[in-house]
Length: 90
Image (cartoon, rainbow, N blue to C red; front, top):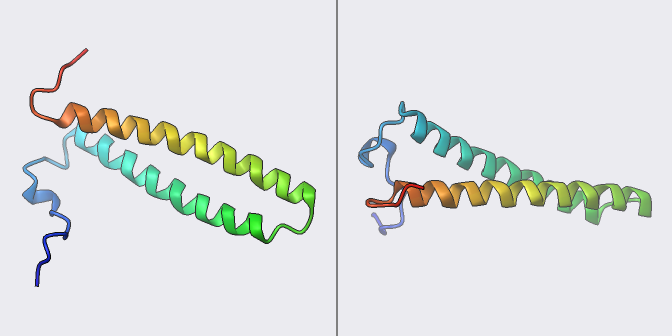
């Protein structure tokens, strides 16, 4: 039973996965997923920190990963805009 929420297969989108632009877009999503998983682990490590120095080091790592995630999400938004029909090119 299809509830309409299932993902569309790559070959049904009309986009060529061999296209460098498409490959870059997919790579951005892989980076986003990896960062989100890493952040989840960092947050668990933060809850289990044994001392203040360890917690401070983990918080710094979390802040760095959050900056990276923000950058990747910004690039994804830009790539999604460019994929829209009639999108302006600067």
